Structures are given as structure tokens and as C-alpha cells.
Amino acid sequence: MADSEFDLIVIGAGPGGYVAAIRAAQLGMKVACVEKEAALGGTCLRIGCIPSKALLEASAHFHEAAHSLGRFGVKVGSVELDLPAMLQHKDNVVKANTKGIDGLFKKAKIARYLGHGRLAGNGKVTVEGGGSAAETLSGKNILIATGSKVAMLPDVKVDGKTVGTSTEAIAYTEVPGHLVVIGAGAIGLELGSVWSRLGAKVTVLEFLDRILPGMDAEISAEAQRILAKQGLEFRLGTRVKSVKVEGGGSKAPAGALVECDGTEPIRCDKVLVAVGRVPNTENLGLEALGIKTDTRGRIPVDEKYATTVPGVYAIGDVIPGVMLAHKAEEEGVACVEGLAGKYGHVNYNAIPNVVYTHPEIASVGKTEEELKADGVAFKKGSFPFLANGRARAMAQTEGRVKVLADASTDRILGVHIIGPRAGELIAEAVVAMEFGASSEDIARTSHAHPTLVEALKEAALGVDGRSIHI
Ligand code: NAD
Image (cartoon, rainbow, N blue to C red; front, side):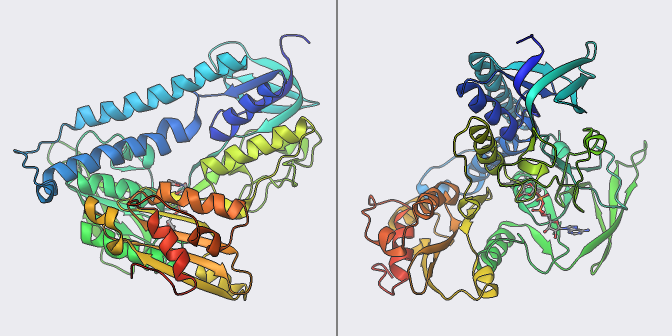
């Protein structure tokens, strides 16, 4: 095989693309990965999940030191924020993660091409704009894993200074006096929490009459109550019409005027637009090959992630489904295992969803609303962290675990958690659902005492009305 010929060319090195590339190399394929950014890892590692988690951890430490260590008998002197050091921590974490992927690519002997990849027909991919001459690669198979970008609002111009996206909000060099967040999804709540903990007034504007659409409504309502108590101001049923940048000259620092339906105009220092994401399918050469995108710009695929063009596959945020890094990873692995003649499969009913606020919010499977809409008879067990010994020891007793099980078979249909470390606790529920467990299976499994996850066992016991500690 010539140097520029491959078994698989992956376009995009986010969690979907880089994981698929590594798995394909493990399966013996000669793999190339085309990525336009110098750092590997995609939005998630560079400007999304990983840097936001670094800031969430760091800001939680700051807030705890400033406000809540006293209850543990820990006296601290005056607590000061060193924002440059906090941002440096975030940058170090990003660097370690993206460099880590470099190392994994080298180990797997994946050929890495810097530049914009475009389908050129007949198994060809052109790579341009990476600083060296354009190149054409040939692949027996091509995998599109180009991810997504921030969705924009028609009358809101993002200037990258006063009005920005999550990319800017993970790198503010000063704590904004007043931050307006547009959109009460995961991004808005996570980054709103970061800056609120560091001292900003945060107002979250949400078009719908609830936060976290898609999550179980009871859990979302509890999340809203807890986050409001922490200082986030929510204005629901509020559609942002326009944002005007004001000041910024020598007289006044720049700020913005946010005009909305449903509430008074708001003056603020920064605006974070977090109203969703849209697939990156532009300029990929799809049209020339006859690959049509749907009304939301996504690439339709079959159960093997094949597009309508033989040899061209797509996974992750560019295809229908939730836009989550781990969903893309599972699809990438399933797709390349299929190419290697194995059986790759993704159980879409067992993909967890976590929002890393404090407390965390995590869910898997069906919500109560979905079960009701589908006419599925279910039983419900619920257990509050207030009655969990470990949560009390941690002084983190807010929230609950909710288990939904089929009324006749007892099979677990959904688990929803708001509470300390919910993002880790949900893993037990995901494994249980992968194995087709009943609530009885969790209820009869020994859980170490004292642990937070005992609340899941208790909620499972509660499905049959026999929780012990409540
Ligand atoms: P989202 O779709 O989750 O939430 C956007 C919110 O904005 C919605 O509630 C929507 O009703 C609201 N909205 C839309 N237009 C509006 C308007 N004009 N005025 C007021 N509100 C408006 O989007 P997101 O939070 O930007 O996240 C984008 C994607 O990234 C999602 O798919 C999300 O799952 C993913 N993500 C996941 C995590 C995580 O798993 N922790 C973290 C960040 C992002």
C-alpha cells in the first residue's frame, strides 16, 4: 500500500473520531486521521467537556474554601481568587489530555494529517489548509466524525468579547460583574455555575418553561430549586430577541443590553450564548457525492453508520441522536468493528447523560414523561440523599435517586439522579440496564456501607415499597 493509501480515513479527531481511529488500528487497519486543529481531541478535549470540568472542580474548591469549610471545623483565613492560576490549571489539564491523544496515535501508528478534510469521491479525501501543500489520500473506507459547532441566534452577534460562546466563557480573564446566560441546557448551567461560584451575578434566560429539557421533569425542577438557592437567577419562558453591545470606548467598559420577550431588558457585562449545537457538515464535499443532510443538517446513516455512498460512514454529532462525547465513542467503535467483520452495536437506551453542576445531575433510560407518553405502565422508587449516611458526612444531602421499573416485568426502564457524584453513581444503573436488570436485582445486591450509591439500592427497594432507611 502506498504511503497515502489507507484502509480507513477518519475525518475529525474528537472523541468519536480518535477513538474509532485507535480501535481500527487495534483491529489491524492502516488508519489516517485528518484534523484541522493542531491539538487532537476535538471540541470536548480542547474547548468543551474537559476544560469546563477543570473549571468546575477549581471553582467548587474556591467556593467551598470561601463559604463552607467552617461546618467541618476547618477554619481558613481570607480566601482569595487567583484567576490566572485557575485558568492555568485548566490549560494544563487540556494540554495533558490532548498530548495524551498524540501519544496514543503514535503508539497505534495512526497517520495524522493536519488540515481540513473533504470527500473528493472514489474513496479520496483531500487535506488542505494545514500549512503544507494540499494532499489527496485514498481510503477503502472513510469515516466522517466532524462533530458540531455552537448554534447561533439570528439577532445575536457573537463578537468573542462581550458576547461569546462556551469557548470564551472558559477563558474570561476577569470575573464578570453580571453574566447573562442564554439557554438553560448543560452548557449554560455548568458555566453559569462556574462564574457564579467565582462571584458573578448570573441570570439564565430560557425559552421553555423549564430548565434542562429532555431530563426527567421532577429532577429538572429540583435542579432549578437547588441552583436558584446557590444564586443563579432563572427567567423561564423568555425568548432572547436581540443583544446590543454598548460602551467599550474610553468612557465606559463594554457591556450588553439583552432584549427579550417575556421579561425586561437586561444590562450586563457578558453574554454567554448556549442554545445548543449544530452539526459540522459544511464544506465536506457531501453534496458533490450526493449525500443529503436532513433538515437539521445531520447525515442520515443506517444501523452500520453507512451513508448513502458506499464506503462512507458517519458517527457522533453529525448524525441524529444526542450530542454526547461517549455516544460518539460507542458509535465509532461499533462502526469500525463492523468494518472489520465483527458485530458492533450501540444500546441507545443505555447512554448516560450527566450535567456537572453541584450537585451533579445524571440520567439513563426513559424519563417519567416519556413512559407516560408511550403508555408504558411503570413503578417508581425514590430515595433522598438526606437519608444517606455518607451524604450527611459529606454535608451534601440535597437531591435524590429515582428508579423507574416496568410495572409487570420489573425491568429497569430509567434511573434519574440529582445529588453528590451523580455522574459516577449513574454508571451502576447503566451497567444494570445493559444487563437487562430488574429493580429487584439492584435491591438484592450488596452495596458497601457507607456509600452514596446505597441511595440507588434504597430507591430500587422503594420500587416495591420496601426502602429500609425512610
Ligand atoms: P441544549 O440544547 O442542551 O440547551 C439549550 C437551551 O437553550 C434549551 O433549553 C433551549 O430551550 C434554550 N434556548 C434556545 N433558544 C433560546 C432563546 N432564543 N432564548 C432563550 N433560550 C433559548 O444546548 P447546550 O447547553 O448549548 O449544549 C449543547 C450540546 O452539548 C447539547 O447536546 C449537550 O447535551 C452537549 N453538552 C453536554 C454536556 C454534558 O454532558 N455535561 C455539557 C455541555 C454540552
